[in-house]
Image (cartoon, rainbow, N blue to C red; front, side):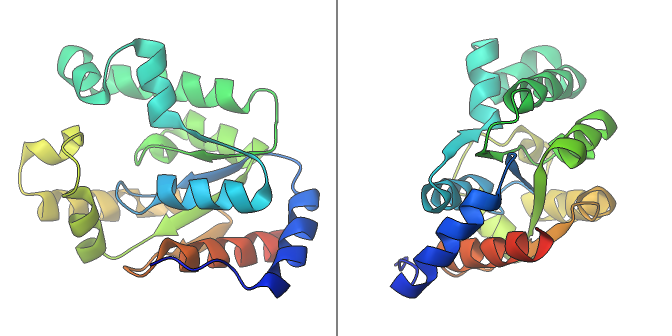
Length: 190
């Protein structure tokens, strides 16, 4: 069960929140916990949260699997880039969870790095396999063995993710532990 941060940590979080003047963007593999961590992080920072995948589905009026099936991955990535650009356009202080491949697109990565506090959430493959098995909306995992696909994608994407200035390892434990690490990473970066 998730625990709340110690009361003594709250004034530090409030001070940190006042220093944040742009979006905090979470990048990393599918299943690493970007949405779960992002919601908790936004609540602590007293700001909005948005999941880029949800916004893509609203914009396209299709689910992500439907977009992949009807138009392919390249089409999806182009729409993803445009949606993330729109979410970041006003520079509001909010937390944005991106899709696993978003940060691998050169234009999207440059946009995020130039305009946001970028946090790479990382995890081991076993944790990714366990978490992604909970949902059926992962089009890339329907193309073979999920463990092999996740291992390959994690390795292929590592060089892109490593460009994020803040790197946090998400373990199989409660997401509040990861949130605390993200807050520490942001505090050190600022």
